[in-house]
Image 1 (cartoon, helix red, strand yellow):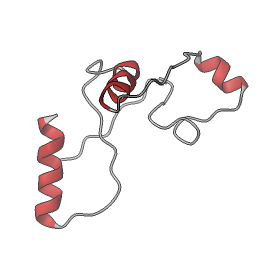
Image 2: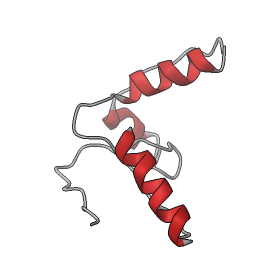
Image 3: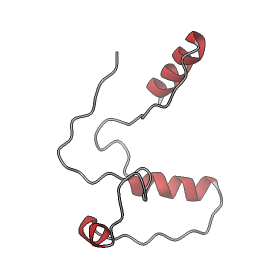
Length: 82
């Protein structure tokens, strides 16, 4: 979390604008943990229904387009900005 805060401050001090993707180290937080945290801090009574990636593909649900923050694992390597 501190790395993200440092990045935001770095960009703000330099007037850097744009859209950025940020992620944590592998297995730092699951999507389920993130959604549970969102539900808790917003005092929501939302309920989640977990389905498989193949089922989503059958329904023509696209990662990031229809399901923000979800990308099915395909052995991708994250880019590292310095």
